[in-house]
Length: 144
Image (cartoon, rainbow, N blue to C red; front, side, top):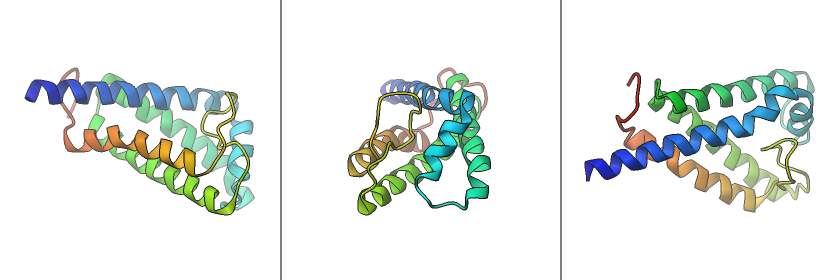
């Protein structure tokens, strides 16, 4: 059973690392497009949007990288869970407000409309992060 848990934990780490690095790649290289996507939600003051979008993009890269190499992967899983909880709540908010725009999750890619369907997708992305908080695993880790 322990071996199965270790395998699942390693798979969750790999999946979340790939997901967050992939999602953040365009956000880091084209920050203006991501800032525009963030501004569409009209939740932050306009003077905060640039700093928030850049910080979020780099936080996604850092957390994905930490999960990939196994360095402080439980802390990285915690922050991934926090981000995915925030994203899920934001998509629920967008669903209630009837937002018909792209969610901004993967800038430069195909359209992903904000709303309840995106909230469900984000919730299912949250499950591997919660698994890693419960059973972080020891395979291929550098530091607990």
